[in-house]
Image (cartoon, rainbow, N blue to C red):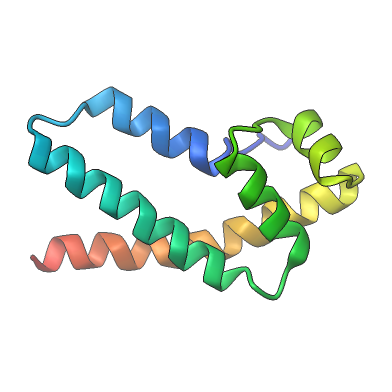
Amino acid sequence: RKRQRADFVAELSASEQARGPESPDEAFEEIERRERLYSKLWKACEDAPDALAMLEAERQGILGREAQMQHCDMDERAWTLARNHIGRKLKPILEEEKKEEEDK
């Protein structure tokens, strides 16, 4: 059985809470980083209305398959395809972000 991937926004929130910023400057940098990642992901998903709807739902705090399916008015197949699309677009964005961090 395939393991389900956690929601993008929930993942970012959990990682932020786990490490906790050490200073106001670091907190601000983390907020900027998340906004930058979200903007890149939004732009990368512009060709997929269902993916954009899910990103907006996550931005509004609507997490989980059932809640998102209901909010976005999609069936399970559409939800799965949108999640997969987001995942395919997110992977290179995160790899690019990691490479930029390593180059600093």
